[in-house]
Each structure stands twice: as structure tokens, then as C-alpha cells.
Image 1 (cartoon, one colour):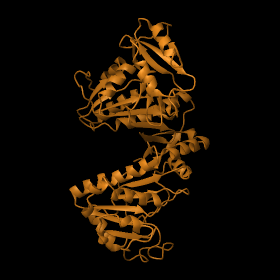
Image 2 (tube, one colour):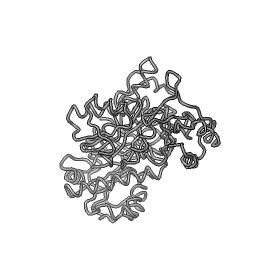
Image 3 (cartoon, one colour):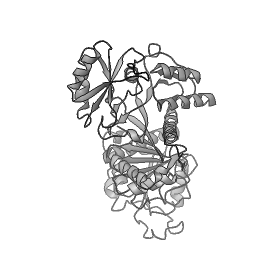
Image 4 (tube, one colour):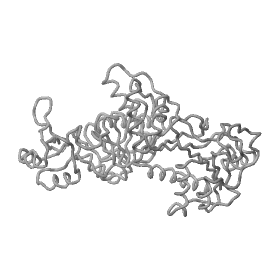
Length: 470
């Protein structure tokens, strides 16, 4: 079972995601069994998560009467370096100097907060409490730790598996440790609790993610290709095209795992979106997915779905969709997109707009700092007066080119439109201005700029899949 590697725009978003997981899991545990055990490392980032729980709006959402908190780190017993089950026989109830400011903000009874030394085993009394809170399995329900530059974390001894391990990775300092963990396929930092009852979740800020990807590329991790999201890599095929196809297959099938039974799903168009359809078909055949209906964004996708026994419907028949999963030609840091090189941008945008959320799948080559720097921006226009449309687009500072098919004739979309591929020499400096301007011209139907439509991107690289959040 692989880890989830999730990328957020900055440190505050990383910490907020960790705090939201505490809220979500503690509420569920309180409802199901009446208690929830949280372990946090006594470092600055993990402490900030407690601070977020103490503030509005999360403060009123946490079931404090059901919560137990264990702080791991420092040396509350005076014996951290030789900590063992014999040296730690009772919990330290009073918070240490490092944790006191945060704990004092929490509406938490003193009998529900404990501290233990890093590397120590949980005292028998605390172990019994946690065993009861975790349904008799033992260990905390959720452990939040920060990754150090040396690849280690504060953690209790490994005699009790945590239900969920959340690893905070912030800034470039821990990028090498993150790259090592992903390249090796270990799924966890050094000296972390194992085995786990649930997969680990790595929460990473954009700076750390970018630095770790650069390190992976420089240190030869690109000589391996993923076999499964977040898992150990295997040797890359010698054929570059085969390698690129495998990256697409990995991320497409990983996205198909996000679909739930009963979902109405927009099915994108393109080489990566194709693997989403194939992944859905596999899950339907295995029987772990039922009552799913796909709304295709092109004739090609509809044919592929029907050939693989994926039920399909039109948008008229299914006007509201739970999600759309589609590919992208470029992905900006805020998950704005360029799409349309597959020729279906109009239908793709219509279907995405009818969806509760949009998930993008791509390989790492599609990540850009500025839209329009690698791919052209496709624009769908009426065949009538297309040269006039091209002249209007040229005023935006781009060079439009009519897309043609293999015979040299104009490429015609499923909706009978032409496509003008617009090259911006230095990228699209103001995508929203371009979008507004383009769509004001009669005969210019739609652009391939998908702005504010996607909130999540699954991106494959040679070490697995990383999940980027807006």
C-alpha cells in the first residue's frame, strides 16, 4: 500500500490540511466509538497544527471531550537517549516548555494530554487508553510529524502501529530526504512508526516538491519508472515513448481509484485520460465499483468506454456530474490549465463546468510556472471567416496557426469547428485577460484556457504520483 504525496501552495496550506485531517478523523471516531488518539511531534510545524485547532473555525468542530493528545519529542523524562519501556513508566501530564503555549489554548482536560520522549515506548497506562480509543488495535489513530533534513522524525517506538501517519515537509531543507524516500519506495521517513494500519500521507509545500523533483532528476531517479503510485520503482524501458506511456498509465489508473460507486463522471479526452477509462473498466470488471456512468467529452472517448463496457450517457441525460477526470497540456502552480491539443476543448470545458469538481491527470512534463510557455493555447473558431479570427487573436500578442490533419486539410472538431493554436513567445502573462478578450469576438467560440476549474492535479514522475492542490 503506497503513500499519498500531496503538494500545497505554501506552508500555511500544508498546516491547514493537517489540521483539517484531525478535525475530519476525530469527528468520525467520536461518532463511531467515542474517542480519538492524536500523536504530534514537539517541533514547530506540528505545534502550529495544534494552534490551528485552537482557533476558529476548527475549535468548534473538534470533539474535545473525545480527544487524547500525546506529544512526542524533547525529553520530558530526562532519559530520551536511552528511552525504553523501563525508563518511561508513566506519562508526563504537565506540558513541557515547548508545548505549553499551544496546549494551554486547547479546551482539553489535563488528564487527556501526555508527553513522552522521542523514541520512547508509550507508558502502560497510556497504551491501554490508546488501545481502547483505537478499537483495541493499539497505537494512536493519527500521528503528525515533521520531516527533518536528515530524513528522520520524532516518533514513539514501533511496538504499536499508528492508524495514519501524516508527514509535514516544508521548504527546501527537507527536499533531499523527501526525494530519497520517494526514490527508495520506503513510503515512510527514517525512525517512523511501522507497520501502519493505513497509508502514510505526506503534506508538502510547493518549494519542497519542486526541489525534490529536481533532485530526483539530477540523481538518476529518472532511470526508474513507477509500477504503482507511491511504490517502489522499477527499471525504465529503453524506449522513451514506452516510458512516457507508462507514466500516463500509472497516473490515469491512480485517478480511476478516486471514483466511488454511484458517481457520474466526466470522461476526458487524450492519451492520459484514456488510461482513466481503462482503469474504470478494470474496477467495474473486478466488481469493486458499481453504478458508475461516464459522460464522454469526445466521440473517441465514447467509443473507448463502450468497447470496455463502461456505461455512458450524454450530458443531457446526466446534467450534474460528481467529478470530471481529464488530462492537461500545461498545469500552472495554481492548477490553471491549458487544454485542447486533443481536439476536444469545447466539450471538455462544458462537461467540466457541469461537474462538482475537476481532477487533472498528467505527467511531470506538463508542470509549468507560466501557461503558454511549452504548449500553444488552442482556440476553437467557426470555419467561416477563420482568417479574420486569426487576425483578431494576433492582436493579443500571439501567433495563431491553423491546425491541420494528416492530409494537410483543416482539422475539424466533433462540433464542426476549426482550431487555431496560439503561440505566445514568452507565455501568457495575464491568462484571465486573454480569456475575457478572446470570448468577446463573434466567431471565436472558446479557448483552451481552463482557469479556476480544476482544484486537484495528479502528476506522475519516475518515483510515483504526487497530488497537487490548488
